[in-house]
Image 1 (cartoon, rainbow, N blue to C red):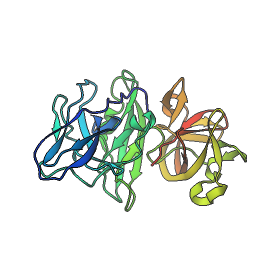
Image 2 (cartoon, rainbow, N blue to C red):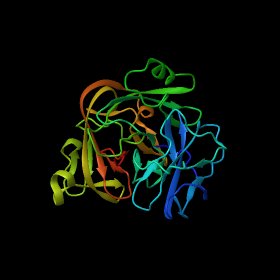
Image 3 (cartoon, one colour):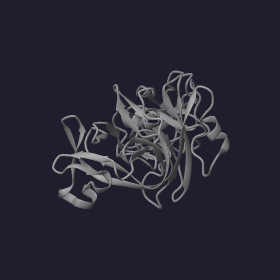
Image 4 (tube, rainbow, N blue to C red):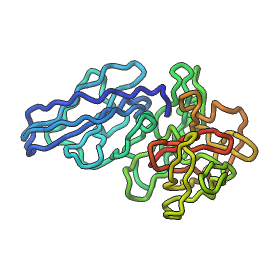
Length: 318
């Protein structure tokens, strides 16, 4: 995530006559789209929809840095908002409002339940990915906008044009991310940016825990595996959080050296000067790594954890 991504204001909702639905409640978010990925998701707005009416979302103001916007909405107040624009290649143009179809909203697809707080709202989000499918993203840092983007979005295999565009003038290439979606369940979406995307730390990275001191990230205890014996880790100086999961990924690619034996994937972000900064910008030392990488999923409000050297590393709840 990056503070360079603007978070859109909550959308303006209204209703228009149409459809055959009984009275219901609706809610919606909007997201900015750039390079076929969502790069800023708004807070939620809600509205009562009378019988035989359709939800209408007013377009956000135009933003020259983005290709358009998409609606994320649902017609009940149960958890989860559904992306209503199927094709990432076709965001809605700024200035064009969205009205749900006469057949009413899409009820299945990429669903967002835990988009809470600016770190997740500013992440890179792909949507409507297929189960059990390998995808590729090429990350690039804009020296002009101070944001991370994924040229061309998400691909099902290597893409030479996207790889080349990641290093175009005034952009710093940050490497390739390989993602394989789950066999079933979940939202069917992928998310990069802060700490997600199929990489992160080598096993030697040490994390500050409350009871056991410095522990290698591969040996951290999670609620998922250890129950009430899970580790509590320092998230910010003096703040602590329970470890929900230890995420493990197979990784093959360039990594950034942080210290003796400690490497991290290039897009992983760290707290620097009040912003989240990719590891690729923190060190020039690289190595090629093939093996298992680790990340932590932390319970609580702070989407981060502290390493031995005091660095605050981002994590993304999945």
